[in-house]
Image (cartoon, rainbow over all chains, first blue to last red; front, side, top):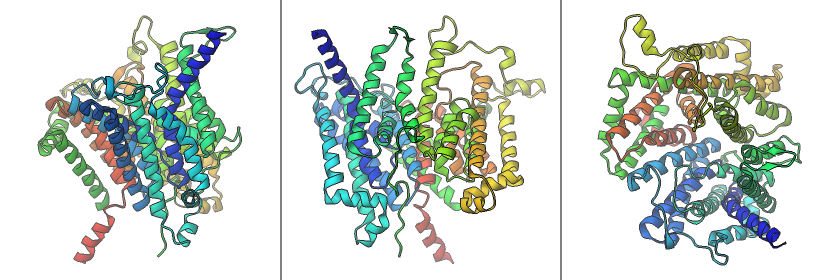
Length: 306
Length: 323
């Protein structure tokens, strides 16, 4: 009995550990997409934040400074995305792709130039990392709780505040918002900046919470899994959170099942489980599991009439 | 014509700033980049070798975006280049045409499915017996495409050995074929019409679904050729992750090439030169790594894609003054 309880606890803890960056990223992406700005660049923002968190923590010795600079780095990319998509009405997917590539290259170039370790930062120890708060060994650092808190907060802001109402309107029908005398651009910039904030926290969690340092391409597609979670949750915070947990659990299972033979099934390919989030999302998009409808104006630049 | 150049110039100005931040004289770095790329016959060989790949992935994008806005096919370049070309591209095509699924998202998802499948196959099925790293056995001589230096040697011209191989001929042939297809066949005409005005195309009797399938499968097939060059021309075996970012580079090449085969050949040459020059640069200046090239690609996609409208007002001011 005790064994079962401890097994469940371990799986739960490991699911939560893996899901934390997904949750933060997905909530960030929700703000952006609800406001009508498609964000394929979550991955890049998270990667850049992870690098600057580890680099700052390693130089200053403070994990908190790392978190702060990580958020600033992600916000810089968020502003770039905003500039391209909102001010210059560029293609949102192209901008996101550019940001991903830029981050993948820049983190290694800067890392190699500053630390001379082939793109890695020096290993972080002690106060340079975020430590578990209540449960030693479970990895429950402050950002895990921030992720849990971000879900009701995101729901409340989007569903219950004046800003949230306007944000939804700007993602569905910006013309109406404009006609009401509100600035479409300023609303969308705020959405993009909120997204940067949360993606920055997600990145910091990766390099100074979950791991002890930055390594190249350490996000490994998690930004895209977060994007999948948003779609899987049909652009709503609580279902998206659920999707993140499912994807996190799948990952925890994949790690546990590595090389294990299941009775009747044989060895389950780990890669199949890892591909599950993507396959599930494709099934959903194909209309086999309900229907996922994006905010109407997502991806469409708004051109103000003069 | 001026705008693409200004955009690329802007990208390079930012690159210069980054190089300066790292503490290297940007002009010195630029000189090395150019000399590294074009300075010796060996380097030219390598420049063309990279260009071959980029031509292929750029063409993928080209085959599609006459009727789709450019951003629709971006992830396709990667997905199909990575694996089965046309067949692999047919799945998201079907989902878009018949189920109305957002093709950008489905192809991004399919990329990851492709890479998971690839890892599974490499680790469990294709791995060479006794090998520690996930790569297949070496192809037999019949599975290799002759290297260019060997071919030229046979006709009495000596050049330094490089990875450039005969698949560049295939690449150039594809450029011509795509040009003929798009501008001189009824199907190409229908595709281009769809790109400019889908409603008009439907009114003229074009089936959007069939055209979606056609364009996606063609594009997948072209992207599959990247594997021809990489695996049969260079590695002579199947290695993991051989597409190594060519899909994304293909987008950059297509953006710069303005979706015309000739423009794509020129843009591919520039990118090949960048890749090779970047390698030389990394060799000469230890504080700069090869990933500098990735940064440059990202900036080019940013400035000639997403921020394409940025310099327009300035240029207008400039020309209005002159007029």
